[in-house]
Length: 187
Image 1 (cartoon, rainbow, N blue to C red):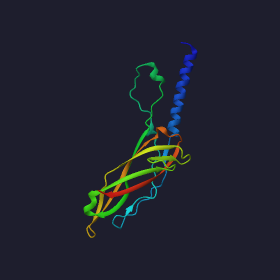
Image 2 (tube, helix red, strand yellow):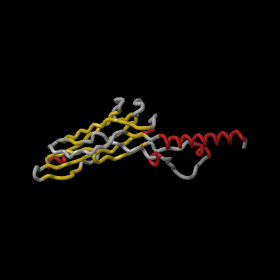
Image 3 (cartoon, rainbow, N blue to C red):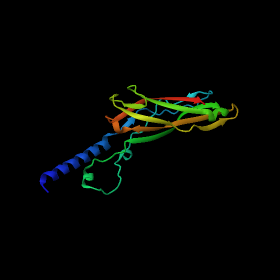
Image 4 (cartoon, rainbow, N blue to C red):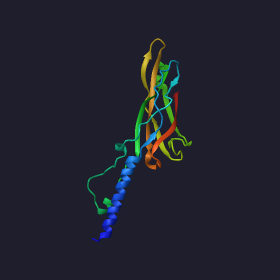
């Protein structure tokens, strides 16, 4: 084996490792906001939502290298770049509360929409460069009854969503922001 191909393979492997470390260290896509607890609604059909919501930064363990096995089938697999998990899922079950008549608890449903600072729907955008956006999917979680008031024949219910982020297309590390819209309606 000549010296040049060995040097080339080492350089390729070192570059792959450097890129991997940079992705783990720098790809901290966040969404900005600060969770301010909701005040329990007192009026019927009053929707109480937080003014801001913080989604914790993506941890290295969430995007760490995904391995399919500890062996390779051919030598070329050793040179393949590592694969990272780019799909992050978070749950936020307690985003809103509403007081409703007891007989309407099972008739409620919620819809959610996230809008990036750059106007793009179903996305969040970088706080530094709004042109960089990350697509998101918001799936409603079941609405649950928290308590009942027999004096007013009302129930306090709450709901939330599952946030799915695809960070594979993010161009900028750092904080990402978006505006959340919550609509609660009856069937």
